[in-house]
Amino acid sequence: MKEITNDGMDADIFIPVTLGSKRFHHKHLREINGKPLLKYLIERLQSCKKIRNIIVCTTNSKTDDLLASFLQKEGILVFRGSEIDILRRFLDAAKYFGTEIIIDVEGDKIYTDPKYVDLIVNSLQDSNIDFVTGNNSLEKYDPTFWFHGFVPVGFKVSALAKICELKKTNNTETGYKEFFTSNDIIKCKFLLPETNIIISKKNRFTLDYPEDYELSKKIFQELGNNFGMKEVINLIKSKPDLQKIIEPVIEKWEKSYKKDLTDFSL
Image (cartoon, rainbow, N blue to C red; front, side, top):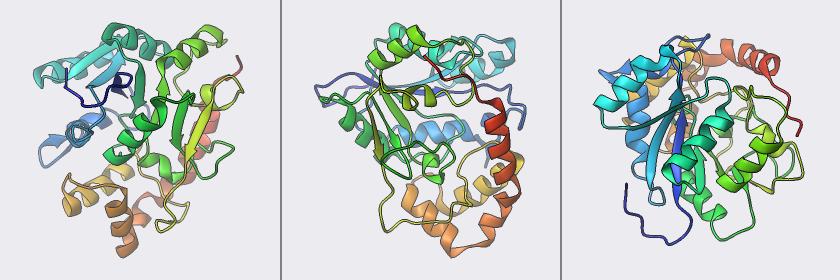
């Protein structure tokens, strides 16, 4: 376990990953310059100052045996749990590792900015807030907003336990963050983009389709692995052709996301 300087609640990064993606098979192990994208993400997150552990939370499915084997060889902490109930997988992992605050960095979010990880931990510690993430407003949560490609989600394990107790479905694979944002039980806080960093909504910073992978190769080749949101946005603005790489999949992803959504009622 990593030594941290703050005396607050123990905060760990959980990275939910599965190799069983229907849209882009084995996407997290796709390589740039011989290194898997998942490892790029983990290495950049190691600069976070408020985090104790980085734990990859994968499933018990045989599909993810290859992933678990890779992580163990790399000396990366791994937890295996429910295949379709990500929230239950998180809760079981939190109990195992003694986690009090979870920073949820999806394995798809390969551009996550470590600055926001520490900011979210600070927002959750010593406050009555249960859930923090980025958004395009201070009110209704928009899961399709480009800002989510850089800003993770943070929540207290006490809030997660409450959701797991009340939710009416065991399938929380898609859109599980909305269990927190679609009720008045959980106290949420939304972070807005800095006013000097504005970009068209027709952008996406994630890893769902082969086109996303093509964009990631361009970005990592230009910036290496020592970057934050500002550097990526400036690059996209300076090279408009990069945006064209992923334009064909934006609408397709939004339709797929809405189709796969689960029941968020408690």
